Image (cartoon, rainbow, N blue to C red):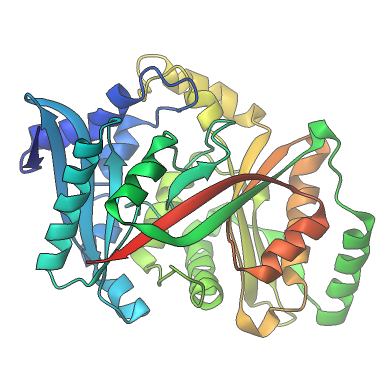
Length: 370
């Protein structure tokens, strides 16, 4: 076995294609669109790369790609965290101890040569796709959520990587009898009266302006949380461009204060993974028809992000946003996955438990000194 840096278009194509071979017999994995996977590594499509120094590596066994890993230094992250922490991601590996060691050692060496003192991951080039699944390997992953075999955790530990943080996933399903508790309905009615907060759906005619407001609220509200660093305006615009074709405007909500200025938001995305099954990552020749006609009928969603600015935290505005999401989606019956919540975010975990949602999955981010 040998490690080869990705230096050509042909190498990059093999790097992107590798998971489709690695998981070809896995009944749980949902093949993402190949075009979207290629876009993650294209500076013209992914503005995150504007502030990253990146290296991609393939693991070859007698010339055949069997594993891969990325290593990168995100200048915005290093500045926000105040520490030289390098990142690794795109990790795919066979059940082979030497293969795993080669991949992780390559990432560690590359990061150390660039002055990093710690290595953290797995970390993706797409916003908030972090960690490995360590609990809850079924049901299949929702849109923009990682998936991996159970043995990846053993490979991380064997290399010396230790748990840095766990990320929790919850769900609520009306087919299982879920209903929002009455006390939450009463609470949110009082919140609206007391603080003059109202929740509205995003205005698709002013989408770019609305996204800029959401990015500002996100950076102010989520910024202090572990692992987060500011989202740039370019990244916000790219996210809006990528999601515009699939979002349900009723599920993208903005909370406004008495002065009409945004104070919070909640973003829930239809789980198009349900439609991607069987397409093997390709829209042509007939995959686009499946998406076109299937999207309006999707009743499974991922609550991808929620934030409230510091001045309104502790005033149950998050409960108001949950209530508004419930009112927008639940009348027709829906399954909502809240993905994900930091394990030590006591306020949000307590709020979700009081809402009666159920635990589903646990992701883990690892770290080590290098």
